Image 1 (tube, rainbow, N blue to C red):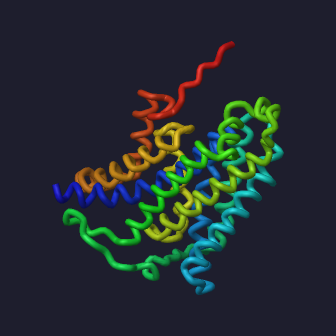
Image 2: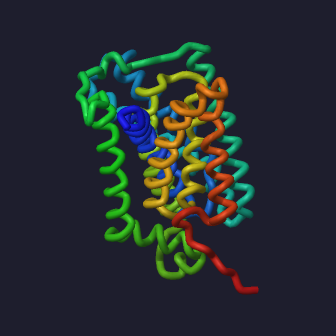
Image 3: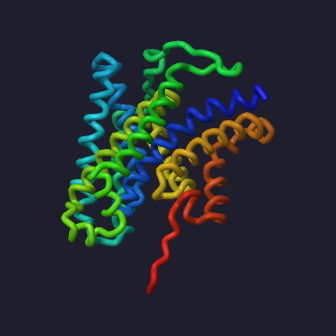
Length: 294
């Protein structure tokens, strides 16, 4: 039982970060019906901006976090304004392919900045650890998990009780009908990309602490997309639950099955899980089944 907990509890912490990336993707889909591949880069640059503030500029921790969030806000706004706004009214596949193009273009910039090196700030944030049922847990991991839950709570309250959040939900259902009621759809699109960029940046700071800043970091966005599909592309609770499940499952497979086959199963666990879930529930665990009348 102790071995199980030693794998499951750290997996829960990592799964929370997966959930946060998925939440950023869900936010964009809920308001624009665009499935975004670009958020892997927004995640990676969020971690990079934080590293620059903390390690390169030697700024205090709160200022480094604020700088990373501000830079990510500007980045999210520019992505929407320059590349996606001209595609409003065009087929959704065009916007989807544009997010892929954004991913590849920013990936080149990301690799150019890193120059093949790996950046880390984990040692600067080492504040000890404690034991939970015999499992050592770092305080930073616990704080990161608490931030994940807090962000999800804020997003749930935002969409349910604020005028802007309700406008975003209305925009997701029908752009033209929303415009006819006085909602500025273009403003909604900008806001949702800014909010989702901030969420992805928070996930990037936490993920970069765990796996450092190096070339595979942007591809955590693919895990986020898998989690979003698993939980349901229009469900924030689904993103949270699916991310936690995937984090635990990956660690359990790495601990129990990888040693038996020589490794590699952990890397395909997410894709195998997605395949099984979509065969049974094509709309994800909590996704809404849409029926269109012809």
